[in-house]
View: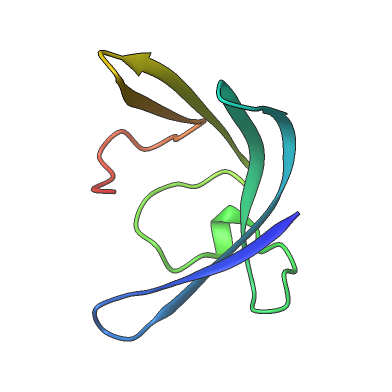
Length: 87
């Protein structure tokens, strides 16, 4: 499980919580994430003060690959329902 926050340039705090669903060392991490309050209680996507249309839960897939002696990182978040989000 995890809980973290992000502070905007205006000082607003945004919280996310979630659970790791799969970890394969050196290959991939998968998790389910949602908006939350500072205690880790899930906040429905329709109630967040962030532009766009947000689902209650977002699946995040992080994959690591070696590329010419370096690490290539691929992050996919699904579903993002509003294609015009500037995130």
